[in-house]
Length: 491
Image 1 (cartoon, rainbow, N blue to C red):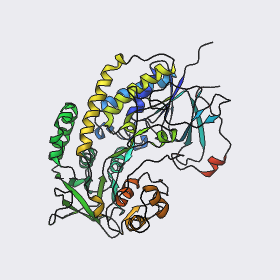
Image 2 (cartoon, helix red, strand yellow):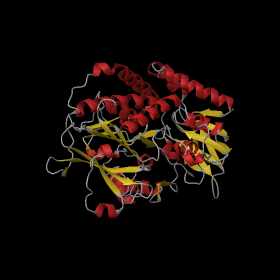
Image 3 (cartoon, rainbow, N blue to C red):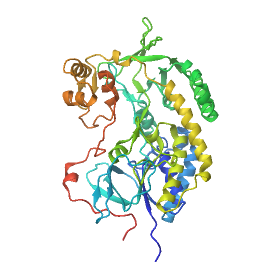
Image 4 (cartoon, one colour):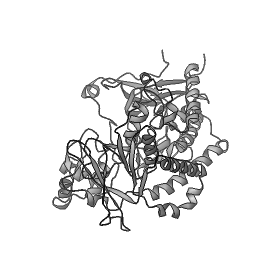
């Protein structure tokens, strides 16, 4: 009778999850790859729906050859039975089992980073399909979190108008739906994501009136040393600059959006130059006609599952060691959840996490000396993106531009004035108290989208809080008897 191979549950099929899956499967571990999307790839490698009949999907991407290698490797492991791919599975809870009859037990914080996996394993709970009314349980010996990131969007007057979308939302429409969000666009905010969004919209036929970036070019010069350590990323940036010139897109650096205007939907946007103090300079306001405003202020690590499991966070990101292990034994993390750094860094981290998980779950001691190329790539790109993060920051006084009438929590329709009243008149001194007094963050998204904006207006620290379940779950699922956890492939 053959020995049972350990099972690793990889949550997320973006670059980090795919790299981890291939690395672990190639080293004797069975992998269950769980993803909420209909197809693998995540946001970065988002593919058009097959029914759209896209003839050249590679035109919407760069690093297409890397995607082809990942997809080919995944298909090979699927055919050989080393990987089970579960699409349209929305993970809402992960629990560690105790040794007694597979019962679950809470995970405690404070265990040393890089602890060895603790038997007997884990159960991953996921909602099925678009309706998400049925839950299944997936059994595994270890868990690797590759949950990615979500967009940080700060409120401003008019941001709730139809036609105002997130930068990533505009990119998702283009990549996944082959759809333009509008014909005349302004792309605004801060962060490297704005570059592919701007050039992608222009290449697809939209007239991009302007790219409005709040970062100061001098901040990049001050960080020349870490940025120079990644010449491939600098070349990528130069390529975007060439496309901006080719499409004759006006680039307004050190500018910010003051207000979006429109009656029934977006009609124009007012932008202004920023002074040395980070406030709009008087007399520089400019109104730009457009029917689409794609706006974003960077990305935030998606840490709901990690935080709910008790994994320690460093600021907004999951803390990991050199093997990508969290401080909860048996749990690894890779990609944007451990810090924003783009697809190449996610691939390196995923590869290292997959190799570590495969070795640890099989009871062997990893040999990090054999991981040197990926580890060097990780170190170089981490330094590069730390430099970028210091340059791509929102205007220092953006909250002053948010009027009292501006809605800051869209789920509960809480205005900035209500948040300010909670702080100024009612004495709220932290984000939790603001939430209790105003209901800001109590809606469908549970503060995932509005938290940075509410915190900025309130003047409070945006401290991550444990959120379990990690997504809205029907009461019928919570009230139902515990589903029988099964390991993919069990009889």
